[in-house]
Each structure stands twice: as structure tokens, then as C-alpha cells.
Amino acid sequence: KQEVTQIPAALSVPEGENLVLNCSFTDSAIYNLQWFRQDPGKGLTSLLLIQSSQREQTSGRLNASLDKSSGRSTLYIAASQPGDSATYLCAVDNAGNMLTFGGGTRLMVKP
Amino acid sequence: DTGVSQDPRHKITKRGQNVTFRCDPISEHNRLYWYRQTLGQGPEFLTYFQNEAQLEKSRLLSDRFSAERPKGSFSTLEIQRTEQGDSAMYLCASSLSGNPEQYFGPGTRLTVT
Image 1: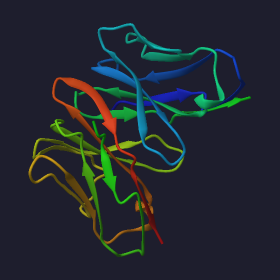
Image 2: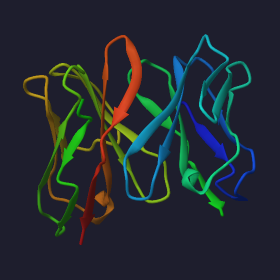
Image 3: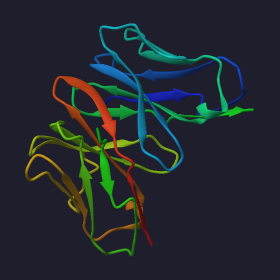
């Protein structure tokens, strides 16, 4: 059974810092990995999707990497802003039809 | 282009009552998923439809839960005889075959008193 872990569970940084969020998974036979953002009480917004054959994806200030063999992904956020404050969720797709989520990292960016 | 919509956004019910939630996926998406998220946790998969066929169900989906997608468009999730442990955010997502990216709705927050 796939298990997804995100470290740290919470992170507080001053505005402008670059930061890295970590995601690890136990079963490396994945189809893809997605990073989501969730604001309090809201649904999920897709940030980046990395196919199993890819090593990284970039969107603006966000860069996500994938190392399938070691069961790890990282989300890099450059020049953090207070508007980046949210919970970031990592999810893996093993079977092409359902996602297994980590517990999330709650990020607070202080002005 | 409208996204995934869910109705209602909030539902408060008493223990033992039945509740039904609705999800309208992105119009051309043929796959639809239901997830449940409790406070401070990541979402957990409940069930998945391709068109009108329910192809997978989690063991989390007890006998009190039933989901339908009768015409391959909107879906409903019904919980019978609600329990306090059913209190959670119920999230719906949709995708298109051949494109793995799932798009989520705003969720329905259920509170069972």
C-alpha cells in the first residue's frame, strides 16, 4: 500500500526566502506525482504535475523535482511572498485513477 | 470555462440523518473522483467513475455510503444514518482520459452534530 509523507508538517519563513518542501513515497511504481495548494477551508488547486518519465517541472517561481528510484519529490518556492501562505499537498498516482496524498505542509510566509 | 462545482458548500446535520451531495465536473471530463478530508489531514480516496461506471471503491466507503453518476455527467454522494465520524470535507475532482491531471471542486463541508 502506497504511503506518502511530507516533511516538515509546518514551516514559517520571512518574506523573500527560498524554501523547499519535501515529499516521500514508499512505492516507486507511480504514474505521476502532483503538487497542490490548499487555502483554509477551500478546495485544492493544482500547481505542478510530474509524469513518471520526467525529472522536474517548473511554473513561475515554483519548481518540482521527482526522483522515482529514491521515492522523493521536492517543491522549491523561490522568493516567497505572504500570498504563498497555504497548505501544500503532494499526491501520487499509482494506478492511473486515484491519488494518495501526504498530510501536507502548512506554510506561513511572514511580511 | 467553468471548473468543478459542488453543492452544498456546507451542511450541518444531526446524527442519524441522511445527506446527499452533488458534484458537477468540468463539462468534457469523463472521469470523476470523490475524496474525503478530515481536519489537518490530506484527502483520502473514496471512489472513482469513468463515464457512468463506478470502477473503484475504497474500503473507507462503508455500506452507509453510496455514489452514483447516472448519465456520466454530475455525480451524487449519499451518506445514510450519518455518524459524528463522518464530519469532514468531501471533495470532488474530475479529469479527462489520457490526461492525468485532476481538477478539484471547492468541497462540501459536513458537520454531524
